[in-house]
Amino acid sequence: MLLATASIGRKLLLSFIAMAMLVMLSALIGVSGFSLVAKTERNVVDAAIPAMIEARQVSELSTRIISSVQMLSNAQNEQERKEAGRVLFDQLESLLTHIKELGGESFDSQLLEALENNVQNVINNLAELGVTVERKLWLAKEIDTRVEEMRLLSEELEQLTRTQVQNTSTIAVANVTHIYDLLESNKKDQVYQALDALVEVDLDLTERLHELHLLAFKMLNQIEEARTLTNVDRIQQIQTAFEDNLKIMKRRVLAVEDPTRSEQMSQLLTELGKRQVVFTILLQQYENNEQSQQLMQKTLELFSELNGTVNKLVDDSNQTTRVAVDQLTSTLKFAQWSLTVISIIGLIIVVIILWRVVYVSVVKRLAEYSSALLSVAQGNLAVELEVKGKDELAHMGQAIITA
Image: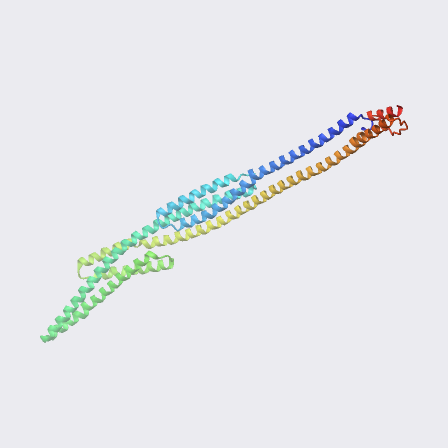
């Protein structure tokens, strides 16, 4: 109805304005669509992907830290402990840095809080583990030092007892030879006295010194075994046997005829008695090893919790990435369908404008009026025209009919 009374110029102007508006609307929708796509892409690039990378790095670091903890626990000397501690400290610093870079916007705040608690528990437990490892090395060094001192004392004691056994054996052999000499001289009374002295003194002394030498040798073996004791029951057994041997040997050295040797043996036994604290240190080492194993087990449990939290973060980051990608896909589909629909609607409107306004309202009527004018020019005045509308062409048609 609006175009029925409008002039040809206004019809064409309104038609071109409508087409221009369609073009501008299409361009606006296209720009808006691509802006949404760019915004979604920035969200993926700036938030989802970095968060996912950081979460994966945290997961890899936690795995490497477990290996470093094993190296720290198995350190055999102070240098290895310091090196393993330095590597572990650097990895923990890197882990904390990556956790801080995760950001609270990309992940659930509860997950991040749980992750921080896990890391703090791991750090506290590793601090205790480091103390136990340091104490383990100190105890091992102390045990080696004391065992070596006891070994030297025990070897000296074993040599002294062996010498005394050899001396008593020599004396016994000499007495036996003397008895044979008395037999050849037919001195029966002296033979009996020599035999009594041999049996009551020499053989008894030889037996006691043999027992002393055997106890010294057993003590040396016990001290050597102390280097490798790890079972608490065996430690207590060796400690009890060592104390019993020490008591017996202190009584047996009194039977040594040489006062100088007896004094030396007594001093050696006294020094060995002072150093039997090594068994207490062995018990402390056992308890420290048990504590270290418990801390190591607790560390593995804490890292299991940490990895569980990190896995949740990775899953969360994957979910965030999937959501962002889905949003990007939806935005692209929306822009695509919007442009397609606008293009189709614009094409239909352009076809309607070209058909109704240009062709029907202008071109077709101009052709009719042109044919009528030619007929009038050739003298044929019986021209029939159907004039519609009130625009310039309708006035032209009325003019032709009037002419």
